[in-house]
Image (cartoon, rainbow, N blue to C red; front, top):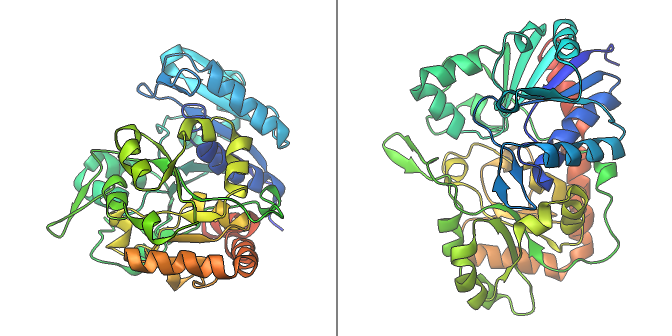
Length: 388
């Protein structure tokens, strides 16, 4: 058992209070609390991050909507009052006083920086050990190699973890920039994703459709970050699977929605699905499984990246069918979890689930419990950071 630590978990939720982001942050904070530690969630807007309001579907200066959603979500999970929102653009600190935040930082054993969104203010760096979780592998490694400020940002941490499980072993020439990368996985709390007994409806997924400006160059080759072109290659997939519903809930899909609907895809409003974290959870739990693509940055390099969203599907007992990023090096595939490279292989994977859904439901849940269990993952992070 680890001794009681004071841990500051820095992340992004109030600024983008949609289901997937909220669950990702919660499972770090609650997972560490369940290990017996004193945990505080910190969000810092810096001077650029205007909060998103899914009701008005716009970005605005005020953070009242996101703060209200996070406070309710945390409270319902036993984390009442365990967050602070430092908002320079509002000239305010919410959740606790600035003095109490400074005091917590001065006493904290660990500053755990999720995704590297948080500015490294002097008070945060007072935490005894600083660690960062790279949730966007390959993109970050190449950015770090090309940009001195990004490199200095990551190197300001004592430990650098990455969702690119295979990256520490060296894959496809992805640069390390002198950083000792350590592999980790998204932590999931399976008891919060108890499977439903119903068979589920459609194969679904949730995300962003076409995030521009994040393609990178590696060894003279452009590696795409975008999902839109990947789905265009699968446009005719529903035609090969009569009687199987394939559903897309993507932010920014509007311009392509009509085309995909005409080819048999069901288009769902991503904001409606995700605006409430419990509705998001139930959307995943009521699915038949997840069918999704992966970014070329991870597919081509075989980084081993695996999505926290896909891990949540598995925990809900819903099989995942996704492009191969090399995660078969540490996860079992072929039962409950499938990889594909072509449209034809995608069809075969979906038919395999349809042929024996109960078997694959159980296998999916088993994979989540064995490989993504939050206490196991978070205990390893603490051990690797010398805090066990």
